[in-house]
Amino acid sequence: MAQVPLSVPRPAPLPACDVRWHEGNVDRAERWKRLGQRGATVWFTGLSGSGKSTIASAVEELLISGGRWAYRLDGDNLRHGVCSDLGFSRVDRSENARRVAELALLFADSGSVALVCLVSPYEDDRRHARDLHEQAGLDFVEVFVNTSLAECARRDVKGLYAKARGGALANLTGVGAPYERPTAPDVELTEALDVAAAAACVMSAVPVVTTG
Ligand code: ADP
Image 1 (cartoon, helix red, strand yellow):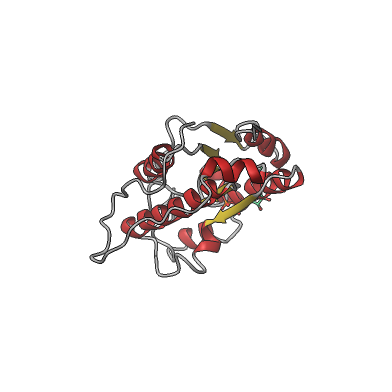
Image 2 (cartoon, protein in one colour):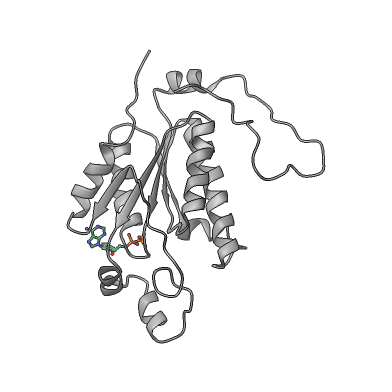
């Protein structure tokens, strides 16, 4: 894939001060070659409790065991820090996805496999994340963790579905807020797969490192 600098214009305007992109001394191709790595972003989308974090963790373990630099950018974890000022309105969810896409872009450029676990219910936000990567010449793999609402509610890992049923959570994705299903994901996982099988499917879609 062609190497394009990350300095490509972002949709958001730059702040009203003089900022400019500072290129490093080592370009992406050289960095990946020297490190023996290939960066990419794997973006897991699906309902809460669908298995994004669990499957991404299994993929992370497999990649690291194989000598690949991989790191999870987990929505809940990022809301502890970089996204801690955001809530769950339509606007905040989009801003959340935008920030995570920008973080993933940097991880991928650095040579890491960024494993994004984010409900990311809106098609536009996922499209934006893909566009950002494609414009920069970076691989982007969308994984739809297609676990049914009934199964997610049965698991109810965080008790959110019970909360929604009790009327204490109005905007839970798939219940009181929309989930726009991906129309052309690169990988689609169903609940019929166990975690190991799901991780293996994802692994087969992660771009391999090529040397030389
Ligand atoms: P999400 O990140 O999508 O909110 P989590 O990974 O936090 O979901 O939770 C999914 C839960 O479902 C975990 O407790 C996991 O052990 C369980 N689970 C059961 N079967 C599967 C499966 N086949 N794939 C993924 N997770 C599964």
